Image (tube, rainbow, N blue to C red; front, side, top):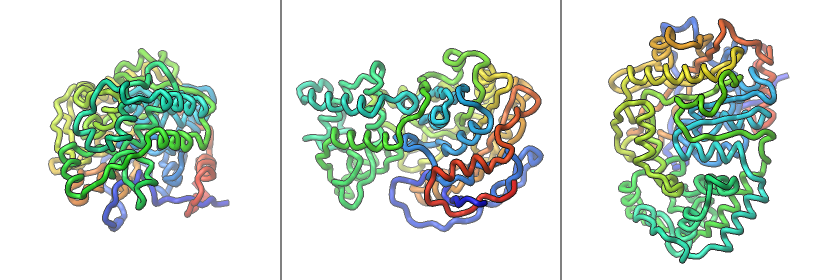
Amino acid sequence: MAVAIDLARESAAPTAPTAPSRRRAPTTRKSTHTSRETELVPSLGGPLAPWWKLVPRRYGHVLHAMCSYMGMFPPALPRYFIEQYTQRGDLVVDPFSGRGTTALEACLLGRQGVGVDLNPLAALLTSAKVDPPSREEALTRLRELERSFSKKKITEAPPPEIAMLFDQRKTLPQLSYLREHLEPAHRREDRFILAAITGILHGNHPRNPWDSRCLSVSMPNTFSMSPGYLRKYIRENKLKKYPFDAFEKIAQRIEHLYQEGVAPARGRGVQDDALSLGQHVAKNSAKLVVTSPPYLNVVRYGKFNWIRLWMLRESVQRVDASLADRTRTNLEVERTDRQLGLSDRLGFRKYTAFLEEAVCRVADVLRDDGVCVMTIGDVENGEYDKRLGLDAWAAIERRVPLKLQTVIEDRLVTENKVSRIWGENKGRATRVDRVLVLTKGDSMPTANFADPREIVRTMAELTPGAMRSIPDEA
């Protein structure tokens, strides 16, 4: 019996209005690695294929969308591998956790989810999702902060680039107070409240601005445009700063985030370098690793999150310097308002050296019967096109203790990617993700489901509004 699902909506839609664009069917590029690649949906063959593509884009617990984040993969991808290769109680790890997608999916399925990321925003979001307070604890703490609010208790004046975004009579004093008095390092409730704030700190307004869930002038939610660009944009469009009640909107946001409850298992979010993974995860303990390491061309996460980092009391320069140092390369950063997409250029040789070390650290914590799933996007720019995952693996495979079992090609609908809001000047977004499936042993462990459609049906049932059908035969 077929189950209705939606194959068309695959990646995060932008938060800013865009001009309509025509969809073109993706073309197939010839590859010298075809023996290790599987076919794209709908010609699915066996468990090692992109079955998660059959799940509607709307699939996923509401906590996944706590805060927008560039470069994340869909929750259905880690969910599929968690279902196939782990049991309840198993440890699932992501050493480049981003906004915590893998760790949260693991906890939702009763596994232990651990996410590690050097970016403080990523670590905050992961921690808040996998180790949340109760709804009552979060709201009680927020009311306590509201009762104690006083402008006299604010010791740091916000910088001009922050002041231009928020109403200075009501909203900005409340945010500044919360910024100084929340204790995310010591209180679970404060960590969750702060993470919830990052999701509504800035964003587009609806037709009636008072119905907005966000606190700033009307601007994109996924990323922060540069201060200079915003200053000009605000002036030219005569944008108004509304005196929103931050406490009220944060309370509404918390209510929204708890509407589907919390995960039955708790996990951990850690702020640290992926190369220090062994300090946080015991040797030979992880049954599954699902991750997406930095691409050859990566986004400057600090620069594109400078408003949120202000709220976190973090330095943009320090964050981007630490992320650059992680790959031991020099970055050339293009202007935010000129190119959103893949703008930092990392040398391939240095990238592969970093990837080799990261794979070795993953191997240290992976169980002998464990699986590592690593997603790496192709690189396309005016100088070269690279199947980065395949080329990088070819450069390191003889020096790492993991074996490549297969490569799953995941073609993306780039018209839906966030970078398309730049129109003709957008960055060259990744069109193909290569999903490398690695093991310590010579073969894959036995999958939990001989028929992957069982997993897909379960996820489809959690997502209303499906449109197409799961194939009757694999």
